[in-house]
Length: 219
Image (tube, rainbow, N blue to C red):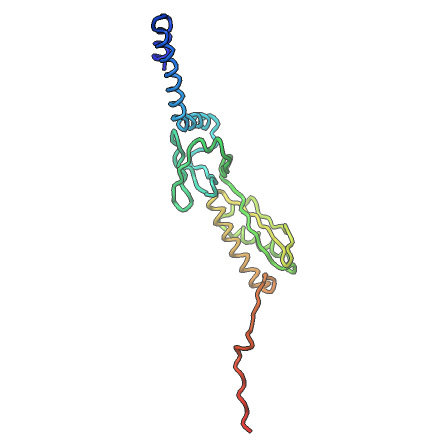
């Protein structure tokens, strides 16, 4: 571009070849526009790479939630980011995505997370007993980090009440496993202690025509 501009300016200083300089300058402008449009994705990622390097919204091993997928940052290149998903798949995301689109970084300040578990039971179940059982499960679990454990009645439905349980763990994978453990043990507790309090919406239909008819008695 510098050579073309210099040559165009030199030709435009002479009247006899001024038109060639103008034409060369116009063609250089058109060429630069075409090249700029062709390189727009690369330039966008280049600028995004500089911004990411300065602000550092993501780092290696950060746990991200992108496009409804959860995974850890495995590699950051000059044009894209490799995210290792929970099932070992790899998601390739351009750098510009992290500048233009919202995403969740679960380990921006620390790796600890709070997991949420919901339980739907009848109104007759005492929340105090459920709270004691949740604390017992959390204390006995090797996944719990000892920071957060709570149980609250967050909503009422037509036939059940919604109970939200909160537990914390040191990392995202441990939080997921702890949620599963709490969910399994709490439902077992309700099944054993208050089986009648579990929600039931069942209808048994008996076809009268399918019943065997009694045989006629002989006279």
